[in-house]
Length: 202
Ligand code: MN
Image (tube, rainbow, N blue to C red; front, side):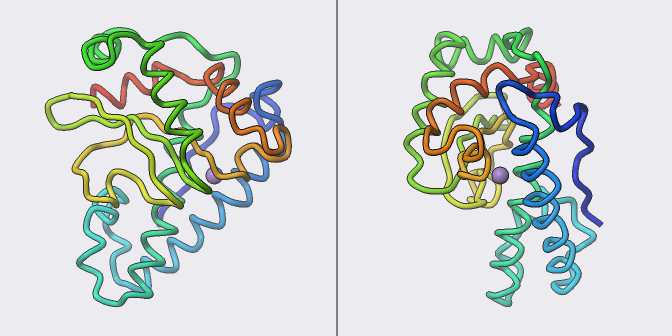
């Protein structure tokens, strides 16, 4: 049974950068639906015992195309949103510290440059998708974007996501309407860099 991450904040806890109606709809409707559909699809395909990362990395082993597509979309929707909601925090926005900061500085030169590159990927994703910060086994960092509910695991990059930006319209449309850039700019105020740092060191 795959379960949604528990929120460490109330639905209105991310105001004013993310409004309560968006958080509630996004978590209790969109994310909940992906999760329920994943549980059904994983049960039907006989893969419900796999950790979600393993399920997404081994989609190729599911022979039935309809089952594979259901697992890719709903498994990604489940996993991506768990990552997203867990990394948000009210009044957040400290900067990365420790080993994560060192890795960011080595790869990108500065945190500001990482933000610029992630923002460009988030704004450059045509239609629904995600922007990603991922690491490889050696701790080197990578930025990327993906369409729909794909992610660096399901795309077979071998990289592990540690931070993500949801750029589906449901993530921002109620408050920001078509202004994805304003949503992304404000999202940086809500990131819990301690959580991201723990993912980096895991
Ligand atoms: Mn979403």
